[in-house]
Every structure is written in C-alpha cells, then in structure tokens.
Image (cartoon, rainbow, N blue to C red; front, side, top):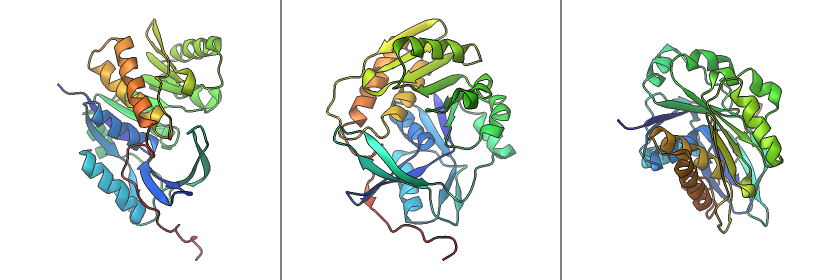
Length: 276
C-alpha cells in the first residue's frame, strides 16, 4: 500500500523582489509536493486566497497531481512573503503578510485525515489548539522551526515526528535537543543545520548526514524537501541511513534553483490595505 501524506495548514506565495517573480510555497504545501515527488500519494488541506497568487498556488497543486478535496478558497488575498537572496544563496525574509483567515479543522476534515499514513504541519499553520484532537486520528509530523522550547514542550506529546532548525547548535546541543524531544513523545526527531548537515534520531538509532555538495542558488524549500523525502522513505521501510541520504540528495538539488519547487510567475501587485 502506498504511503499517504497530507500537508495541513500554511501556503504562501514567495515574492522575489529583485527578480520580479513569485513562486508558490509554504511549509505544509511544500511537504505535500515533495512527498508526491518522493513517491507518496499526497494531498494538501488548507485555505487559499482567491487572487492571482492564490490561482498560482492552485495551478501548481493541480500540475503536481496533489489531492485537494478539502481545500477551501477564501475571497481574499493569499498569504505572501517578500524574499531576498544573499550572495551565498541563502534566502532571507524581508517581510511577510499572513492571510486574513485561519484554518479550523471540522469533523469532515478529521475523518478525511484519518485515511492518511501521516499528516505534516508546523508552526506557521496555526492549528496548535487542534493538534491533540488530530493526533487521535493520525500520526503527526510537526516542523517547530526555530521556535523556543516553551512553544514545543506542550505540543511534543501529540507529535510522532518532530523537526527543529538548529544551525546555531553545537553537536552536543543537537544530541541534547533530540534526547529532550524524544522524552516528551516523538519517536523520530530531525535537527536540520543547513551547511552542517542534519541529524536524525529514530528510536535509539541516530544518523548524521552531511550536507551534500552543491552549488547553492537558493536554499528556500530545501528543509521542507528534506522532511518530505525522509518521512516518505522511512514509511516505505527504508533504513534510517538510506532514507536520510535520499532526503539530503533531494535538498541539495532544491538548492540549485530558485523557489521551493518551481512554477514561477510574474509578480502581481500587492493587495490593497483593508481600509482602502
């Protein structure tokens, strides 16, 4: 039976100001797309704006063959980020505007998500209050990013796979973070460190994978591709080391191009302020 992954929550349009182009993205949406590319049956559940950027997001999902049965369309602008890229290829956020809506999972959503092998969400999706309820239906992968321990501590008991951004952590601090997180619930803990590679623990097994050499053009989406590929390969039964290497290979390839997974379009005008 195929692995079934659903990204739940955030999507965004990344606006590259100097280049005048925009790309679809967002952690939950990116993971759905990269899970599909890794061989899973993939779906996305979230809210998309009705404007031109929202149309770009919907078109990309359709082109990638992502199931969208529970997607909502809101008559408003889609969330967006303003992006810059430094000389080393690392993207940085100049600013971002969240959507004027918030996802609330209903009973039909919960019944739908119960059909999946795993649901992925994260700190931008704003469904923290429903995480416990969701965890009773389906295993959860959660990307905590760089959020403080106080944020993660109350959510970890409901999470099967936890991901942390740890570029500032020492080797010892990475292992301490894994021990701390696993003690609170997750079986699998991922710590990504950019150019320093990634460390993944599954149960008592720990594997460190160096970043694969590549010419970095844009790092946006690399972490999401790593998460998606890893969780698909692990759920297919691959050994931890093989799964992590496949994930690192995918992440390295993502770094060679602009945008998370493609589908660039001319940058549309910013939405007017609500008071206009």
